[in-house]
Structure formats: C-alpha cells, structure tokens
View (cartoon, rainbow, N blue to C red):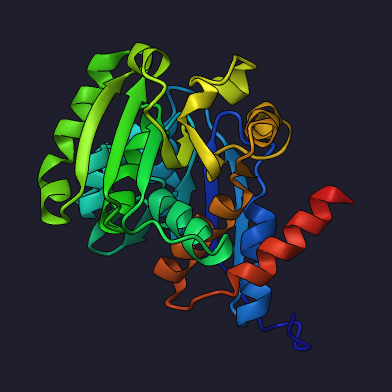
Length: 290
C-alpha cells in the first residue's frame, strides 16, 4: 500500500468461477504466485448461479476484470463464450482459463498442461514411449488428452462407462495422435475386466468416481508393477483411489500438483511471468497436512 493517502493503487482483478467454489484453493495459489513474482493483483472466488455464468463473465469483464479461471460446471460454457480459443479448447470443447482484452475473450485449457507438468517435472516420470490408461471421457479427460498425446506416449487407451463417449473423444483427437505417432483407442471397461493382459505404465483417473465415493472404475490388473496411478482429485476425494493403487504396488499420486501447475499456466498467460510452481506446491501440501 502506498504511503500517500491520495494515491490509489487499483490491482488487476481475477477470479475463479464455479458452483460450488468455496473449497477452491485457487485464491491462495494465485496470491502466493503474485507475492513471489512481484505482481500486484486481486484474485477472488465467484459463486455463480447455474444459469448465470455468461452474465457474470460479461459483468466482470465490463468492470475491468482481466481474466478468470473456470471450474465445474462451467467449462463447456466458457469455451462457447470465447471469441478466440486455443487448439486445446477447440478439441476438448472446454476451457478453464479466460483472458479479457479489447479484442474480446480468449479461452485456453491449462488442465492438460498442468497434469503433464506434474507427472513429468514434479513426479519425474517421462510419458514419452509409455502405455497410458485414461479413465473417463468427460470434461476432465477431454481437457487432458491433447496434452498427453503431445508427450508422445506409445499408446493411450480411453475407458469410460459409456463407451460411445470414449469413442467420440478418441475421434476428436485421432489426427493429433497420428501426428505424434501415438496409438489412440477407446476400450470398453468390460474388456479391461475380461482381459488381464491389458496393463499400463500410467493410469489416470479422470472420472467423478472419487467424488461420488464409487468404486475404482478399473480392475487392479491394469496396474503394471511400480506404475504411476494418478487421480485428478486431491484431498479426501482422492483417498480411496490412492489406497487402492498403493495396495496393488503402484506409485499413487493425487491431483494437487495438477491444480498448482494448471494455475501456473493460467498465471503465465495473464501476467507473462512464470511463477515458481514447485515451491508453491510444496507450501500448499504442507499447509493441507498441517
């Protein structure tokens, strides 16, 4: 704050929009990013009625808002609002980051970038040349698939309770997979149950099973010894999946690092500065464990 009472500093405004949103750690993460990079900004939570997303975004931008993160259940609407969008958004049909400027609304999806950064940089595991199982074909899976393909794994199998949804997601990314020489296929969950030879180096849970308290949507036979089993959720929601993975000899990892890394990608897009995400992840883990 300035010593001069007549000199007002108006910080650039950002927010995370969702319903629910009270649990979001994004304000803490972005406040810490700003502190560590010397940026001046204000980042808040915005709880928005299910039918009020577009109006809230328009109002926030009109009041000088510079950008926002978008969480459940508004990511599809966020993509539709954009005047310009990244290739990731066009393929996923979902956006989690909006940037407001005189040119309109630019949409990106940093979820997949955050997932990849957490696996490759924070967990120290290369995705290139590996066999990957992606459980789920909803918004979370759609947001991640393009970034996973760009890492050039040997194979990605997408398994979803509704097989047609997995097939549609694979079809949307078929040309990208061909470009990166990655085998991309939709696989029926029953086929995973029936064929115990189907196993993987990396298993990623992008379903809502963790939130719903449902059973893990795959048999233990999908886990190669020592493989990485990753749940996009974090905290209590991820615990059942992590316990299941560890009990079958896998390395278990929750999605807290993905949360911090996708936030870092958004922050870099807004501010042109790369925040120290690994430091902030370590601090957030310590805070949550305290």
